[in-house]
Image 1 (cartoon, rainbow, N blue to C red):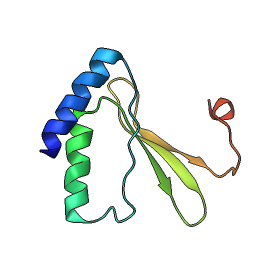
Image 2: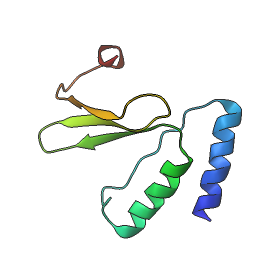
Image 3: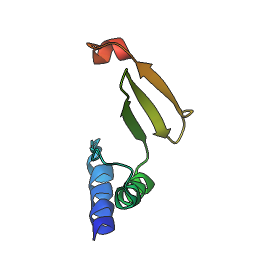
Image 4: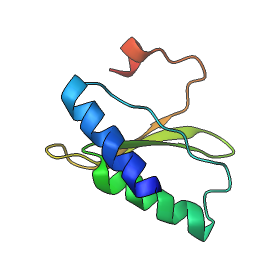
Length: 85
């Protein structure tokens, strides 16, 4: 059923040219959650993850049709989107 919902969401996104934003539970290492994440990532064209560590955070480009994959550490507490770009 989850796969059907993701397939429908994917078609709505393509048709309406929108960007969905999803969140992921904190207990991300469970087998069930990793399986659900894989289903979502298979349907997505672009996947960007935010990883929070004890000391800083980083954005990771995990999937993209044209750009090289990689990550960017963001140690600043009050970084705005325009400063990020």
